[in-house]
Length: 355
Image 1: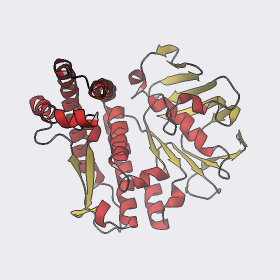
Image 2 (image 1 turned 60 degrees about the vertical axis):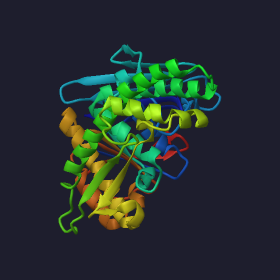
Image 3 (image 1 turned 30 degrees about the vertical axis):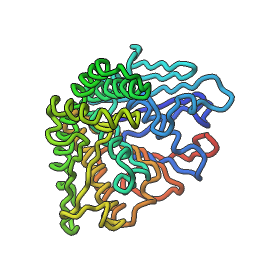
């Protein structure tokens, strides 16, 4: 699939901008702070109905404006699709004229893989970054996962509020929340484990012609000890940690505290890997994400690259570009460089306008 066009109204520093993309390679270039990343953000809005940069929707509304609007047209293998997002005091999303009432209804509709410089910290940063990567990835191939995730965090919030109340007579109520949390939690763990297994199968098939053999393996590190697929086991751990949870006022066990470790040739790359090895790992994991989404959905995902090539050395840049052929790519950079051998569509951005 690919995005044909997008129309921005009062989105970030764009007051009124229509952009028509090529189904191949698109390069958006210009100085920093001109609005290149804002285009990537606007496109990605259609992946899950919210920004990957801001927690609050209102932050994307142009200064002193009352609303923002994004309209996009997509082309799939056998169909066309139009989508609309309106943000003011409330958010409205429509796909082909039909109102989307829940974000879970949008997830999986438009397949995209985004790669920003922040993803190079996938290994070095904390567990939240890795959980976020995994959650976004699984949601695209299994929309039911996103629904489970929303429900899980809703229950978790209720349980934490109950813990913080420090009410002495909360045992029965707490047990009810524990039941719900464990039921949803083990399903999330099962899908995370299966996704990591799938990445492990795929990631080592992505190699360069003259590369040294680098065997990458991701090991799931669930917060639930023992059998993380067993609801009763999760329930028992919640019960055993109740005193500690009450003392801290938060739930200390569950998928919200999961992590995973990445190994290259049996070495924990976070502890002992070089910068180059870390970047090779992340590149291959993101490329693996593209391949798995294509396999599971039957559609090539749109590849969004936000100023990523400048972060890579020449060898890794060449390797990466070679692996993303035959996909729609929308890439931002500061200089108009000849990244691709094939023809590209160029967009020059200056002060929130495309030239």
